[in-house]
Length: 115
Ligand code: AMP
Image (tube, rainbow, N blue to C red; front, side):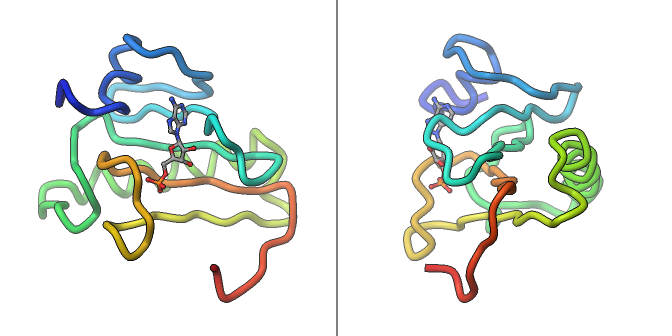
């Protein structure tokens, strides 16, 4: 937990959010500024600033997050047509919250390359 971190404060429910899934390792909640009909942020409860800060011991956590994303995509009805999972890392990727988060986006078509 980092006292200065927005997402740590969402995990502790000091700041309210629209939570769609929670377990002992992970929280998932709807993005406050959705970029698609479905836009969910999946975050580890452990405070990790960026994916560049991941450690070898985080391997199991990362696998778990991907299974949570798979299940949320099914539950939200976007699995059949497809969806996008995005991780922004540091300044060049426009990361704005420095607590690792996976954007799960679906419900519309996406272009490539990304902007
Ligand atoms: P990124 O730019 O990859 O760091 O993504 C941060 C995301 O957090 C953005 O999509 C924001 O809209 C989202 N966000 C910021 N504050 C909140 C909040 N209080 N509740 C939900 N999502 C938030």
